Length: 473
Image 1: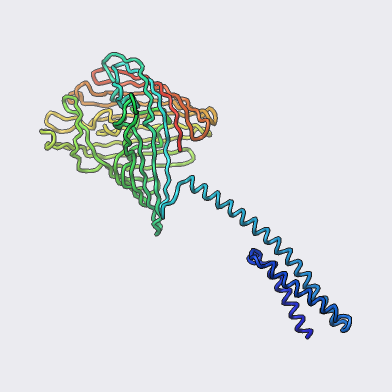
Image 2 (image 1 turned 135 degrees about the horizontal axis):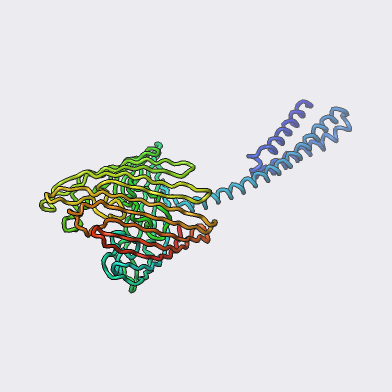
């Protein structure tokens, strides 16, 4: 009997210890009830053993002591269970807070649609532009009043007054997706719209403009299919400007459909071909007879210093007599471009680009000159061009910064084939001051001076003051 009683008491002690120490059981709603039943059982045993102790001596006394030990263990187990429950409650509360923070972060980064993650961004921008041209009036509603187009600066005419335009059409929106397809593959897309260089409203009533596709492409692992910035252009080298582009005469600037492969810093792309030609009368022909894509190879090197980019392009310029009578020829165009961003001090930077080649016309400065000219026999001669820019950005403080920039373009036109009315050279300088009261908001003012000279020596300039407010989201 004594042996059985001891085993029973040992079982009670073991049960109490397990119930009190187990974190999983401490969260169970019936733990207290189990401890209550065990405690009642021990109390009953103690009462009976105390009664026997007077009659049976030491044996009953020993049993009673074991029962009291069980009672003490139960009490300790109850305290342990209560502490464990409080710890588990705190852990659960912290997990809930963490989950809420995660959900808020996820919401800020986008949202899920099935297996697809969708993110978005862009900016809203207001521009107030006051400009004057020395060589003629730029018509109201012309895109040449929205941003600098070097080839459209008037020459040889009467100076205009200062014309002022308000516009929000540079506002931009993009949508990105990433879909989980498993098997270690990555697939995504990018669609981007703005309202520049499109038809639509007027300045009298609605000031509304139709949206246009800026970029639309698919990415699959290292591949890109669709329309984006030309691989020949280093977008990251463009300086901060209130103008739509800024150092326009000296920069490569082109978006077009392509197939691109990227491996580390190396890129190779097959891009949309398009040949622009200057006729002996000085007119521009967009041939549309191209049969082979433009080929671009590029290498990007990044480090703590900033980044450097080298790119080369090869093109087949082509025009067919089916469209333009006696003009039927093809020629080879090529070019190289070096660009980059160099960090200066803690926050300042220096950006630059230098580009040279033959048959690059439509890639430079918004097609300042054409790719080629037509000889008398109908054959093509590529036009050589040289261009570049440099820009320095300085941070006066965390909220104030400025950029100064200068750019230059020069064409080696075969004047006997193009006449003296095509652009020989163009350059511009600008400086700005930008204030960011909070990180997503920029408020800036910029002064720009630009000049264009044609082959016969006639020139014209543009002076522009631009104020902008831009909210990035």
